[in-house]
Length: 363
Image 1 (cartoon, helix red, strand yellow):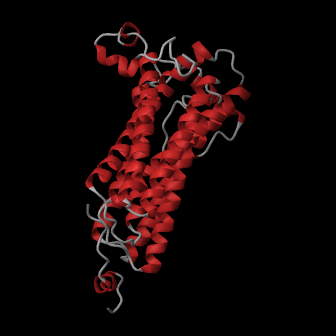
Image 2 (spheres, one colour):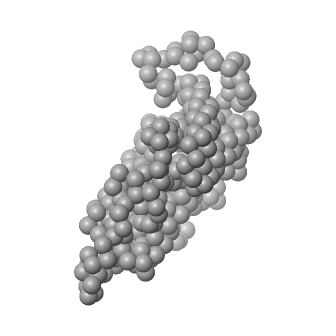
Image 3 (tube, rainbow, N blue to C red):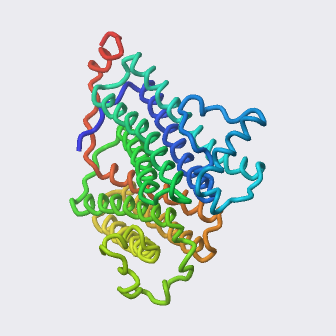
C-alpha cells in the first residue's frame, strides 16, 4: 500500500493539525446527528437552503413561517399535532445546529486546504486525496437533504436506508481523513505476518458493517423493542418464521425490526471474538508493542461498546446512553483504522530536494 509524500516538518505539523481538527469536527457532527435523530428533530426544517439557511429565524414572523412549514408534513400531523411554538423551537435548534456544523466543517476544510495549495505545500498524491475527500463532503450535504426529503411527504420519519447511507458516508469521510492523517507521520516499517494484516482489515470492514446495522437499528427504532439480553424475542436465536417473514427474504435484513436488531447483535459478537483472536495473534507473532497495544485497545473498546449497547437496549434507548454508545462506535472505528494503517507498508521518506522545489526554496 503506497504512502503519501509528506511536506517538510513545519508544513507537515500544520497539515496534520488541520486534518486532526477536521476529524474531530466530523466526530462531533456524527454525535449531533445522533442527538437530532433521538430527539426526532431531523424533519423540523422542511427546506434546503445551503446559503440562506445559515441564519435561523430572527423574528416572530419568521418563526411562525418555519413552524407553519413543519405543520404541512405527516410527522407533525400524526405525531406532534398540538405542538407549541416553544416545543417546535427545541427540535428546530437541533436540526439547525446539525446543518450549521456541516457548513462549519466545509469551511474549516476548504479554507486551509486552499491556503496549503497556494503555498505549494502538498504533494500531487496528497492533493488528489484531499480533493476526493472534499468531493465526498460536498456530496454528503446533498445526501443529507435526500435523506430528509424521504420524510416530508408520506412518512413520519426518514427512510432507514437513506439514514444509513448518510451515516456511512460521514464515517467514510472520517476514515479517509484519519487514514490520511496517519499516513503523514513518518514511522518505521512493521514486519507482520499476512494473516495479522488480513484480520486487521477484516476487523475494519466488520466494524463498518456493524455501524451500518446500527444505522438501520436507529432508523427503524429497533432499539425500543426486544429490550432483553442475552435472549431476543424469548430465545438466543429467534425462529426463522419471525426473522424471515417478509418477502422477498432479503428485505428482512433491512426492514424487519427483529432481524435488524438480531444481526446487529450477532455482528457485535463476531467483532469481539475476531478482535480477541487478532490480539492473541499479535502477541504470538511478537510484532512489537505498538501493534500489540493497538490490538488490545481495540478489544477493550469493542467490549465497552458492546456493554454500552446492552445497557442502551435494556433501558430502551435513553439519549445519554445512546450517545455514549455512538461515541464509542467512533472510537472503535478510529482504533480499527489506526491498527490497519499501522500494519500497512510504510512509505519511503520524502525527498528533501523535491520538497524544497515544491515549496519554492533552494534545495
